[in-house]
Figure 1 (cartoon, one colour):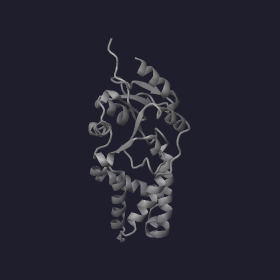
Figure 2 (cartoon, helix red, strand yellow):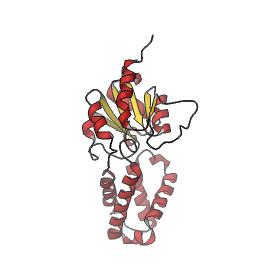
Figure 3 (cartoon, rainbow, N blue to C red):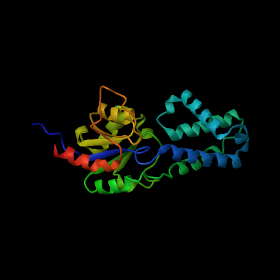
Figure 4 (spheres, rainbow, N blue to C red):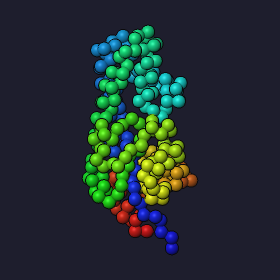
Length: 235
């Protein structure tokens, strides 16, 4: 009987896996808007916060080359806004820093700290993100040996290069890693294409989108992960 190799490293997605992303971003955008109202009121007199978001999304459609780098995308969208408004762009970097620091103010799901505290005693752990959350700025770096971001790789999950970068950094084979994430496409399909086993963290009760492939396990709370790992390691 063939046994699956033992799992040595757990890789975790960040946004919507360890904390809810939308309220974090909305709060950061509100802080940015308030800052802009003080420092570049010409913009907020023309755009409300929703219109600014629409403007940025339209910019993303024009600059797919920046889709892997959320920080660069936001900075360049502010530069484009300055140009459109015929304003000097000296305020852009300061504005971005306001957003960036606020974006790091996350509120962990209740199950995160106790589970990661326990798992850290047994496993190496890494963090993977398509966004611009920093494990250091968000205060979660004590759990993770390293992190990998789309900005540094040049590709977003689910691109295989993203997961290969993680494997190379860990010095492990794909079958020695288990990836945990909330997004079926970016996390679960991406891990599959790199030969990595996965657990789908389905906090919101989504329907699984594919009939052709399933994650190794589906869970609704991170609290279920330690028992699943015990089962997987025993097989």
